[in-house]
Image (cartoon, rainbow, N blue to C red; front, side, top):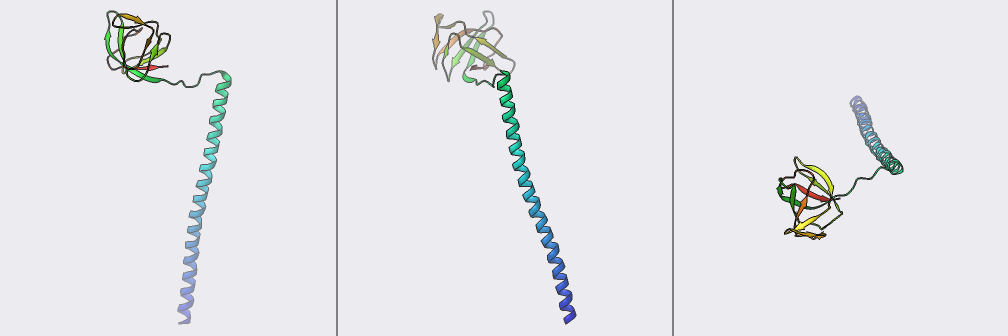
Length: 146
């Protein structure tokens, strides 16, 4: 009986030590992973801040914002005029636009606009305007204001 108790105690000690080691290893791994994540996040933030700062010092433009204002509903290729339906914004002569589609991608400044063959200087949301475009456009191309 005494021998079996001693053997059981030894086995229990060994198994508890093994289990304790495994648990400790897992805990260490988890904390190491957490620390590494924090360090990586901090270093990435530093690198990004530094890159933005350097770009600003070099005078490189930041990524510009383009606002979706409408789409091309028709294109007259013989006179190179696109008919634009303004769904979400307004346009003025002098504004820059970006026309983008599957096969189309160009930018231009607006020099003149027309509604029903009459020259206008401003167009508001909901208007359908004619605009001389410098490249071929297709129906469904999106128009962004730069």
